[in-house]
Amino acid sequence: MIINLNQYRKKRRRTEAEAHAKENRVRFGRSKEERTAELRERERAKKEIENKRLD
Image 1 (cartoon, one colour):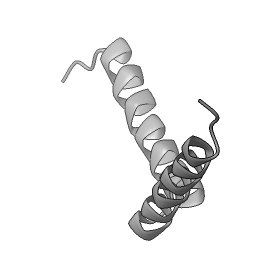
Image 2: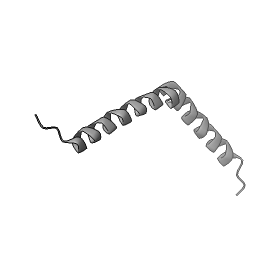
Image 3: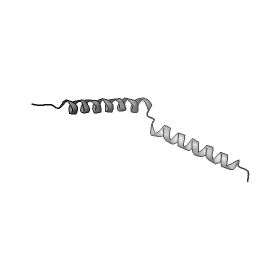
Image 4: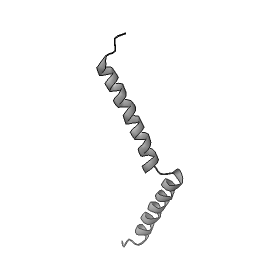
């Protein structure tokens, strides 16, 4: 059986990149609860600034 080394290397690189991405998702990822809390805080701050605006 003949194996193309370029295809093998590409496949190996791809699987290593997927594993690295999975580790990063665990390490740096945030839960849905954290994302929604940040969104609410941003919206609250935006409204607060708008309310203090002088016309």
